[in-house]
Image: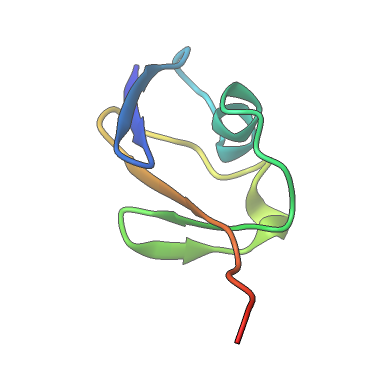
Length: 65
């Protein structure tokens, strides 16, 4: 299935979870995830099923002053 992670298209197997997409892009904590503009708690990454054309945003915190 096709998903978009941080505005880049990827192909994932059907029945993939958020954790699969994070592995695909080699995401390193800390980060937050939103699917179709809805925040997903990290406790749900292994259980949240993705669908064709989902828009996933992986957002890293910004520090500084």
